[in-house]
Image 1 (tube, rainbow, N blue to C red):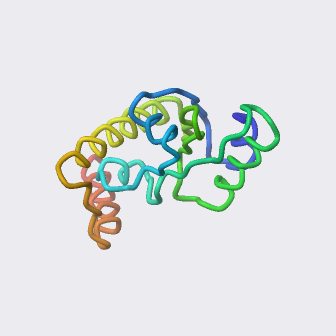
Image 2 (image 1 turned 90 degrees about the horizontal axis):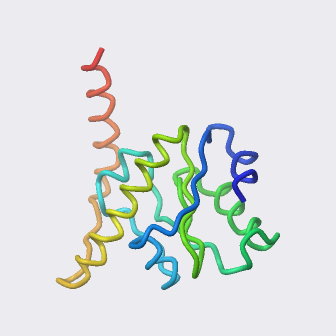
Image 3 (image 1 turned 180 degrees about the vertical axis):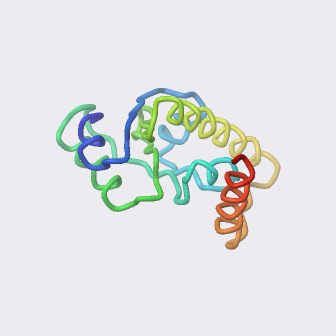
Length: 142
């Protein structure tokens, strides 16, 4: 499954598979993780983290399920493996680990938010505004 992601996305330099506890809760429940936590957007994640249907790990069905999502969703940098765990992919190992930590943090926050009324979506304009601020910060660092 790692090699298939590398083949499908030339920009990917690191693929990590894990059983991060909070994100894996969503995988076990077959529930996607919504993008309601701003730090995920800073990692370029602009689409809900989808769930790949269960299939034996490493099987053609499992790998094809992952690749179908990777091909069709450029704003996705991770997938939840139903009843199993998480697969992250990014440009570098450091970015992949940072994304993993942020995704698991988001999952924990969403689970807790659901105890007090549920997570709320980011405003539609948030994605463009976050991208603009990141460009401004990058320009200020020079």
